Amino acid sequence: MEHSKTELFHFTRACHPPNPSIDLSSVGGPVISPKPIWRYLGFYFDCRLNFNYHTHFYATKCLSTLSAMKMLGNSSRGLLPIQKRLLYRTCILPIALYGFQLWFFKGAPIVKNITELKKMQRRAALWITSAFRTSPSEAIEAIAGLIPITLHLRKLNSRHHLHYTSIPPSHAINSLLDSQHAKNQTPHKTATSKLTMKQ
Image (cartoon, rainbow, N blue to C red; front, top):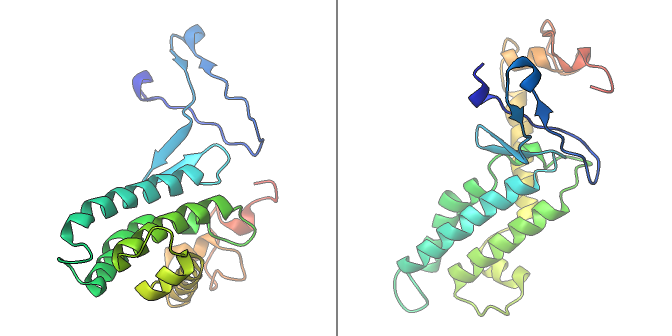
């Protein structure tokens, strides 16, 4: 690999982790400084794997999209509330929840991520209903026909579990799971059943 393409990233659970560079000058290479955020396939990884940056990035992207959509209608002309809701559900919400499976699971620290998404959905509900900014979030979400973001995440998570049960036994993903869920597939060398507790 060329030195210009070499990247370094540290993973840790420490609250204030060190972030040392690697000096490759002794072997003719550069000094590689670690990146604070690693982007891969549209997912943003931070060193603690809490995905706060990932959620913040997509929530901010959705807020920018909402601001642009305001030119499509206001309280007196333009799109109807039902059309605004349809735009939000089909064009904005999927962006906000992209990759939620990475951080939305039992035992994960999700409070900060959920708070970020709630703020985004509140702005969307205000746009849909043209309500006052001081209106309570739960009320305008109900009027706009939007379920709370936490319940929406649970619904999507359940759908993913149901989708997994429908894949055929010969599917490659089964070989990566433990023996209880592998559907009699031969375990892959990196299957969860072969990993140690530390891994």
